[in-house]
Length: 227
Image (cartoon, rainbow, N blue to C red; front, side, top):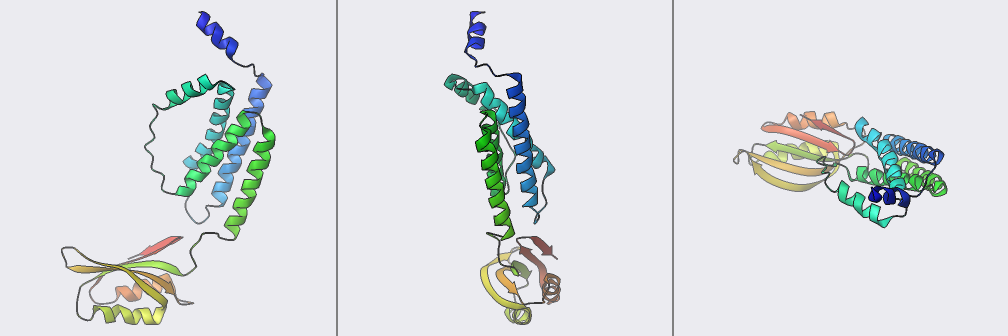
């Protein structure tokens, strides 16, 4: 009984209003993080569950920070308790990890009641993320694709697709060549750039029309065409 009394006595008092405000601020910040994630992900399909997770994560972290307070013992106890949780979901995009840390930091700032850091910090990061998305920072140049196809090996297979390359491509660079299906086909991988006015469909259809061509895959950062 004394243990529980000591535990309650050692817990810093936080008013109900402060608790509600901290969690509400954490929710707003987490919602903003989720919205900016959706806005800057216009080039790919977004997972609604992940967006909801960002908002929930900010509130949970804010609550955790209020529970920990200034107690190092509670912090280590909480880490030990949470270490039994195992997450099996594979993160496919490293950008998602950055947004998870963004939501964590927003929740931590709201949880300790430092609204100045929370609001100004999140606001500045959101502004910079919008700028980076507007200038398409880190995006591949338009018209650059990874081309992969399989063709029956012959003495003239190179000249067959080379003619298509000369008509439709500005440049091409071979990345890899390998045999597949027990040597029945040769798989070529190229980094190619389309000429102005040439569509992905046009390249795929003309390559597919070559005798002995089995499969053509054209991959870009923002999409995929395959036949």
